[in-house]
Structures are given as C-alpha cells and as structure tokens.
Length: 420
Image 1 (cartoon, one colour):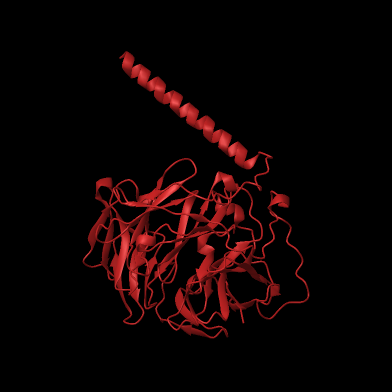
Image 2 (cartoon, helix red, strand yellow):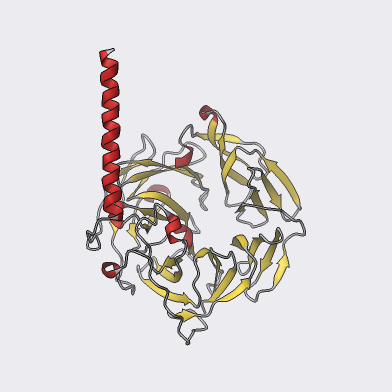
C-alpha cells in the first residue's frame, strides 16, 4: 500500500514539474522581451541514425551558400502584424522584383488546383458549382467533366492528373477517373493518401478502431489488392503517407529526440533500412523535389520564436541527410514549389507573429511576397510583390517558368503573375 502511495506521489510531482516547464516556455516565447535575433545559426548536428538498427549516417547543416539579397529586418520587426502599405501607382507587368501585376483567372472559390498534364494549364474543383475545370493563363475555362460533385472537402490528385481522390465532410471517399468517368468508393477508415509516381498505386493509412489494426498500406489506384506495409498502432499522428518521385520511399515517421529536435524515419515498401534525418524543431512538413533526391521541409522551434523555418536536405539512398541547409526563410513548405531540380519558388509572409508555426491561424491575415531560391548558389531573390494583398496557397509554376499560378487563401480565387 505504501509503495502504491509513493508511486502516485511521484507521478503527481512529475506532472507538476512538466506543467511548470511548459508554462516557462510559453512565457518566454510570447512575453519575454529578450532579443533572439542575434542567435548564431547552428553549424553541425549530432550523427543521425536510420530506421531502428540502421547503419550510421550523418548530416551537416550548411550555412547560406551566398548572402542573397534579402535584408534582415528581424531586429526591428514588430510583434504584431504590420499595417499594410499603400500600393504604388507604378506596377510592373512581369516579375522583376517590385510590385507586379496580378491577374484573376477564376473568381469563384476553388479547391486544390494542380498543374495539368500539359504543364501549362491549371485544373481545379469549383466550390460554387461542384464541377472540375481546366483554366489556362488566358483565363479560358473548360469543364474537365460534366459530372457534379457536391461539397468536396479535400482532393488528392494523381501525378498523371487523370484521377483524383475526393473526400467529403462525412468521411466518405471516392476515386474518380476523369478518362473513364468511373468512380470507386474507398473505406471510410482509410486516410492520408498519396499516389505512386506512375499513378497506378496508392499508399495511405488504414486506421481501424482497434489500435492493433492500424497500418500503412499499399493498394492499386482503385483501392484493390491492398497490402499492409508498416504497423502504425497509436502513432498515426506521427506517420505521413508520401510516395517519393523516385519510387524509393512511401512514407515518413517522426519521433521526438529532445525538447527541440525530432528524427524523421523513411519507410519503404520492402522493409528497407534507410538512414534518417534530424530536424531542428517541431511541426515537420515536407515536400519532395521533382526527382525525389531532395526534400524541402519546414519546422518551428522556440529558438525561432516558434515561427516556421525552411530547410532542404538530400533524401535519396546513401545521401539521405547530406547537405542539410537552412534556407533562412520564414514560411511553410506547403507555400513552396520546385520549378526544377535547382530552383524553388516560395510565397513568404511579409511578417509573421511569434508562435505562427504552432498556431498557423495567427498568420491568416498575413500577405505574401514571391521569392525564388537557387539551390546551387544559395541566392534568395524577391521577384514579385503582388499588386494586391494575398495570403498565397497552392503556388504552382508552369513548365517553362513563364507563369506563377496561386490561390488566395482568403477568397479561394485563382490568380497568376507573369514571370517572364
């Protein structure tokens, strides 16, 4: 009996210590006046290991490869979002670094626009009439299908853009083939979908009611012939379905190392023993390069006022974890897009309040500028300030990099900026 009481007292004491530590962290993050803008950038990390029992790997944090042209205003940055400046009368027709003409292509609210197979047009779901359309850079609109899909809440496009998984608020999900006009219903307990590079297969989480029946699974793109690949259990929130373009990796699993770092493990189809990477923060969000050889990701950390920071790292074969680089931009990976193997375009908020990584809703009223990053030289270039105030999502660059398409997160409208 005495041992039981002692055990309970230890548990209560441990919980109180945890609550006090979290209170101190939140106070430091949101109320402390200490200036952290001069904190040095970490130059090295501890050696990282792969999936459990994997061989040793290592990664090196690479400093900015060149100074770039972004002025560091962190010392004087206000704690609340700044007043929006007045748009000047002179507006550039193409993106040359200043205020740039922005054209509205779709005035209705859209959902999940994606680059069409031709590489020059955008296909999307129109939330106003429930139909799918294609729109080009001239604003010409063509129905992708005559079928109406009411109240779609999320979409996952296949790489060939001929299929899509449609999700509804009640949890129902279907795969629709725009070429054959056929649809297949998927189980409600399947979540977080990603297509294979050739669009023939799917990876997703199968989340049964019993934690012992939760798996990362692979199936044909119509949901048939499903096969369990990796046991998930109670870790479903830490597992990400993500099929790499080089066909090596089908998912990722994140696990805490300490208060500031997490380890990202890569999952293959055949129990491969991949290396892992260490990320400096929480809220890991990744995006593959076009070849799958690099992974762009964002994380937030108390060292950065819990604002998202953008990083890139090698992510293929024996090079996993090599050339880990802090790109020195405060934005999310989902606001970026690879235009080529060596160039990334990103929508970067003009200013982010403290805690925006932990609470993204703090940035809902922010407005974004467009940056281009050269991964070979490290140069970051402000290429366009839209001529209106847009909270950019779904940034898409066409195949010849002549046009940037994007959705305004507030209205859902689709706009374009001419890059050339």
